[in-house]
Length: 600
Image (cartoon, rainbow, N blue to C red; front, side, top):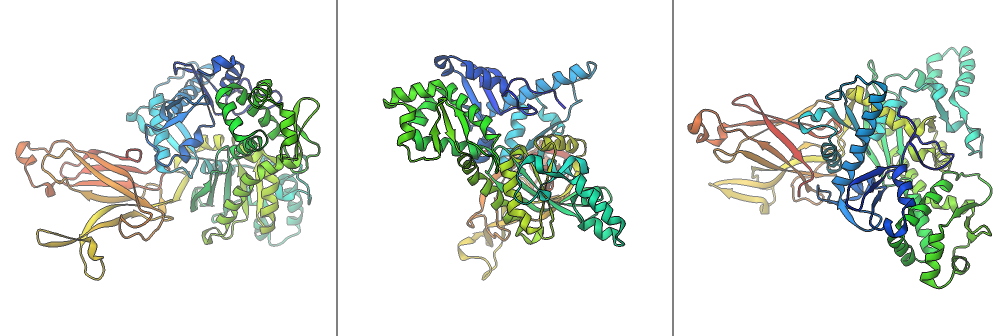
């Protein structure tokens, strides 16, 4: 593991660093993480206006509906910059930071071609977002396009699953074994103690194998058998990501039982709820102006809230004090003509008061209320998944990710799902589960043997027109032959099981002699039974490009009928990214093939 990150809040273990990037007024890289946050916070307010500070920007890639290489991100001061450059700055910093650590540990390590990089992304991210991360990695210099295989895109709940399946009893906490009504972290019983009780009963049981499966998570995990299935709920800063896996024997590979699901219900939602609360008290227009004109002070306020947010718990007694920066208090008085204490008295928000120490005083119930929309969203996603017929029989849920450290979330998930007979388990190092799983995935990328396609993918083609079967408005008559246009030829269907390495083969012929490039539009939809590319829900999502070398045999070959030149493509939908290769059948040579999901 890397050494602890420098900076940050006193008393908090810094195994992770926040997604904060600071660029100079000229746009050059300055710092990342706690270092960026603290430096920006300490800048003079007037000077800070010119610096480019980005925070929590990873989610912008998920929420962008028309993501391209030209998509812009807005810094705290309102200035915009290409998102690709922002991500590349961050990835370049990670690269240099990690390589320096390796040099310190192993000075003789050659850098070139010795590192396989694994970038984790939410499983619910679509193909454009995954390609965007790969493009940012190329720009950052992690790998070159020629060595593309040295960079793996790992799906976060998959990485967590790979790690969790290796855990032993003492590395897990079973939330199901809490005493009724308990929600305090200190009152959780380790699975280890459940295991010892079960083992004692096991000695008195003849049906040991049956008992092993039924007596608890510890035994299940210590001796998992083929067919055992479980859910991983990855609760991070921006998203909740759900995956369902079945363990396969004899090699312990994993099979995905249902396509990745989830949504934008991450810890950031609690921060947004706090911002909305401030808007109710002080006015949304004031909060917007303050963020724009005093960006460093706004960051200071979010730091103060983050520290209190981490202490929230379902059974905590006593109010929480949140420091307001002097800049906030002063700016409010100048803007509104009265002080913040007056604003709180006039406000309809009764559960937030002004303390005699000059702080916002928030009741525990009020703090927990800030969690509720996000926590409820997470539980709804999990419950919707458990209703699926493909997921029946699941008895075990792993709660992982940074947000899973929250006692509020743990208690709510256990309270909601425990009644279903589902055992909710949290790894001890819950915040690092995905990181460690990504390392295991990088060493054995074939561990997830079967995945489910999230969407239906295909192309538009011409088929012979069949009266009565095809709509009249799709009829095209060409050279006396009747064709049906816009037919959706499916490569893979939504929710279809696709094995790693499984190929979908198609052949394409250049339309013209001497043609150097073939470009084929790709379409996708959520439905499995779309017939035409003009059906509702079907959209163009990318393009398959084939770069052709000149036909061999001189000018006569180039003038040969185009139908005689066949390009055979092989597409793979069972990996974390959609991949394509192609071969010129006449020469058996590879053809440069790529799928672009980012161009409009």
